[in-house]
Length: 339
Image (tube, rainbow, N blue to C red):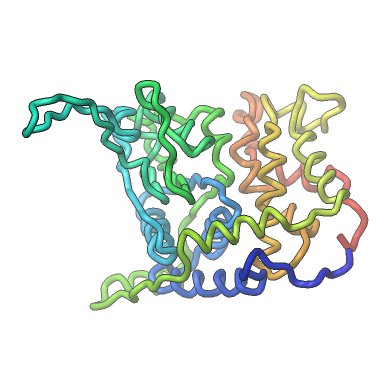
């Protein structure tokens, strides 16, 4: 595919987005050691306009990473600790009866909940019951909430970044597939290598922590998202992404043997959508004007991980969704080289 001349949306160019990426990584590195792939993927989700689910044991800086990005992006940030007694109205807000002291008139007024923000950190989202988890569905998909028949728009841009702890099972409510499908990325954060852990301990037991400076605001981020969406994708790359997702479905015609054996349900069409959108964001953040095969393959794991549901046989034999995605990347024919 031939190179195109640099494009821009208004006064914004792809080169500027690359600078935003470098500056964000620099600011985040002041408080987060290592976890480069996770950080890069979270930044990619912001520029693509998608939500992120981060899974990891306690103490791996999941919350710190998200709050630090909120500071660097100059966006309104709200953290909600999800607990078993959290109610849907605790997120969306509720109508309250207010009395005008001068006239004595009483009127219902909507009091906004913490969903009315730009970055919502849903901390330990699997600790709250499905009814409250479901309160996020409309917000994540439509960027709005409906209370007592009245619809209220959420601020733009709007992101849900949720964390969950995979270790403790007591008192947890696994996210239903329909809600997992609303997240663009499902990321796994793991323990740091020994030397990086030494750096963390040294920095967190010192006397000072680096201040995070603002890199861009909401208006600039929305312009970046518009440019990402306008990035071209060659038809062979588009067809490859769709084929990759279709091959994950055991009930379609002639799926790979390992999909038929180990997968209960494959990815929805939303998987194809997010695969291309995330690949576009990755390309633009790297300073390129078109999407490559490597962009699609690089985001396949975080995009499809939460969309491939394995069956009992897979569980009994230790076959994970990650392993199946790896096999799909090898089994699905790639388009001609050079794309």
